[in-house]
Image (cartoon, rainbow, N blue to C red; front, side):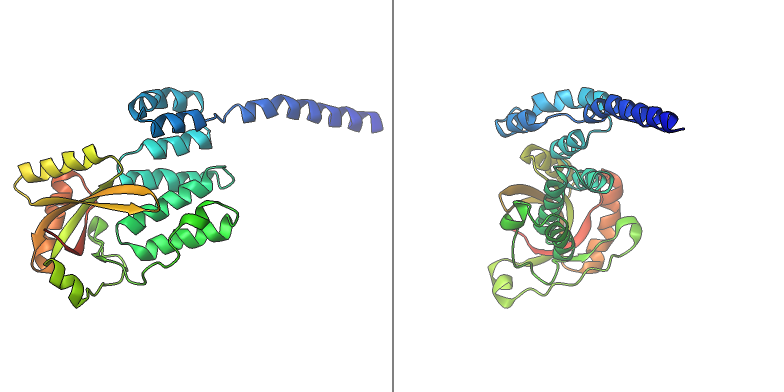
Length: 248
């Protein structure tokens, strides 16, 4: 009986030694590719992504790289959330949380930004990203209404100061999208303008990350903006939201 148990134990060790390389083989060092992106070779790295996803389907590193290469901010957030949920122990999980935080902060969705920043501080207290995040997040969101799928979200209304109102006129507008690549924001802006809508791009930098936020329409009332929100979302396949903002 003892010999049988010993044999079983040895077999388990052998099996584990055989599987371990396969498990680790699912990861891929993306640091050289991230450096290539920083050097302006983004398109070159993007061309490699489909092959890497196919070769390393269970790699959290590749999933993070996919998020970095995803130009639409909202879609990138979905990728990062997938990484955090599926691979909480990933070496890039804290970076994914930080990028989600910067996205929501750039859009003025401070309540959502705080949720992800609090999670970053709690789950990854030793992360270098905790030191570069904004310490004082505004308590009120600039997003007035989030009508994804026609259902308003529970976000707070913002009150603009008299000083802000004196700088530029405050309008209700549709926050159509946020991109890390300026050309994509310009493309959406052009499509909106070609369809007859006013459009503007406002650049926002959050802890070193640049976002180019596209707005559609200048409306004097919230109801008017809400009426065009569903039209624009449907026509351009967007998930826009109504905001109150200073526009030129």
